[in-house]
Amino acid sequence: MRACTVRWLVILGIVASTSEPGVSQPTITAVVNAASFDATVPRGCLISIFGTKLARAPASANSVPLPRKLEDATVLVGDLELAAPLYFVSPTQINAQLPFEALGDTLSLIVTTAEGRSQPFLVRPAASGPGLFTRDSSGKGPVLALTPNFQPADAVAPGQPLILYATGLGPTDPPVVSGNPGATQEPLNRVISIPEVFAGDYALPAPVAYAGLAPGMAGVYQINVTPQFLASDRLYLRSGGKLSNTVQLPLRAGQNVTNASGTIQAVYPAAQDGVGWTPYLLVVRFTARMDIGTAAGPFAIAVVTEGSASATITIDPANGSVEGLLPVPTVASRNFDFSSSPDRRLDLFTCLAAGSGAMSAIPFPGNIIPLSRVSPQELQALQLLPLPNTPVAGSDIGLLRVQGQAQRGATFVIDESSNSALSVFAAYVPVRTLCARDQVTTLRLIIDGKQVASADVKYTVGGSPSLGGQL
Image (tube, rainbow, N blue to C red):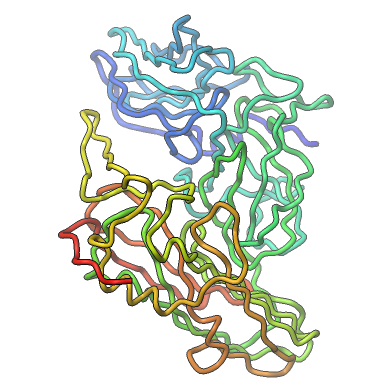
């Protein structure tokens, strides 16, 4: 396994440049996962600390083990005030590692500079908090994926080995002192809990050959994985029951179809439909048309949104078979009973702003939404959907398994008159930013590795509750 060097810190987005130096007492405003920007951070995770007057001037670590002080800045963690390893400091951002050695259910973070100490910022370390690094360091969009030769993976096909980089994957065996790099030869620092890698909207995780600290790097984990099936470009991790940020793989377009086209739209919500709770119902309708090649092999159609609200259709023209898996609400959720759902239904009409500026909302009692809060438009949208025929344990959606036929050399169509059972589906999607008024989610149609249609769904959060209908 080839050792990675500190030069990859720039590629991984750990190092950034910021504003002019500050000259007064530091203030911390947020602490997040440095890869995903999620607020869930476990011990050993790389974190980004945001605030003001956090350092006199920008400075970066240039070697490992990582220093505990850069410029005039240190980060003290926990009751023992352990000095955190530092990758980068600036007046408005610090990138550091939350020490494995910091004990306690709640940890205080204090930034010290020549001008003084910040007020403590409290963090509750999570058991798990995976985050995938992306190419533009935003936590969204194209994932940072390399080939086995450590070159950027620009066109990924099923069966192609990949190297991914993440943080927040927890302790390793053998363990490593915070700030120290992963071993460059055996025994390598493998994670105790191997993450699951879900790629391409395939139901099963991809085989992982290695998951552990990246050789020569501190707090950065390397995952060697080989996706077996890629219906879409979505990729995420699951570690310790916690999902990472969802990112995108650059897909290699297949050669199985020609003249591929389609349309996609949200049946619900429309721009005039106010969303009153989260996760909210998203109903999608699409069409697709393609000419299947005379020598075509298996390929897939994917309709991608957010969360679990995606549909996949696999086509094997050599066998003449089509199988679609579409999410649709369960009987209980159609009656607005989410008492068995793992997701709390938050009443967005109760949005509150905390003193820190964070937003919160009150959950519905028992996770059951009263009919007085259900709009006629949502009831109409639910009536378009068939019931699931394949249950999903512990979920408020099931799967509708639909089978059909497709042949080489023929045209395959999905619309309201041909293969219509494949053309509509629905699931529950979290509101992107809690209590923000106007928001957008994007729908994408991918055929044989190529995006052929997309649509932005604009919706309004909150408003006056609509009068409910009768079920």
